[in-house]
Length: 226
Image (tube, rainbow, N blue to C red):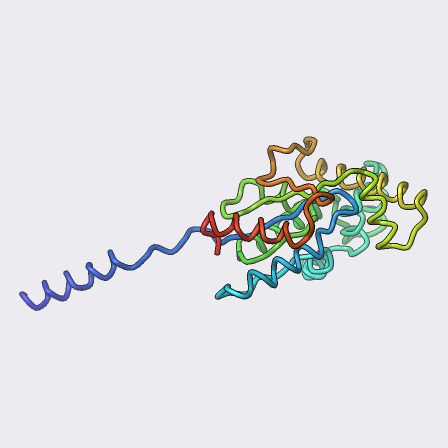
């Protein structure tokens, strides 16, 4: 009996000393206005995090989401249509449903995409770029939600350089893309985007990519996300 008591107390001692495992894992979402450098910043951030991380950080882009969606037998064209925020009337949905018995409604596809993105965030150590990630994971613990903004003129010049467009074509591209992204966020949240939905809003025209990465990294350190 005395030996059993000693073993019990020893076991309890180590159970108390052992640190509790977190109920959630860290993840980052990056929302952006068209023309801001979300992809380069996400890649640079992942590289910096992986210099000290025990579990590798990865970046989730639209290609990864589309590939995951295939496993749920979702139409690639329909997935792209949702992420491109295409306008689809209820009549068109009914017609598509009659044409294809395997057709899934946009709401059902949107629900599946939400579950895919949530599952990536739940696994932790992931940087979700766009895809309404900030809205979808808004209520999930462990997330750091960022938004990149910049003046219209700067964003137009950025798109000109990225896509080799004329100023007029780049301006049209930026305006149209901004509208689609606003609609995408609304489709998933049913409300307009608000600054209060983000932890940090950074002006990409005044703060360069490396500075942004360093600021995010520092904030993550302060929040014990590393």
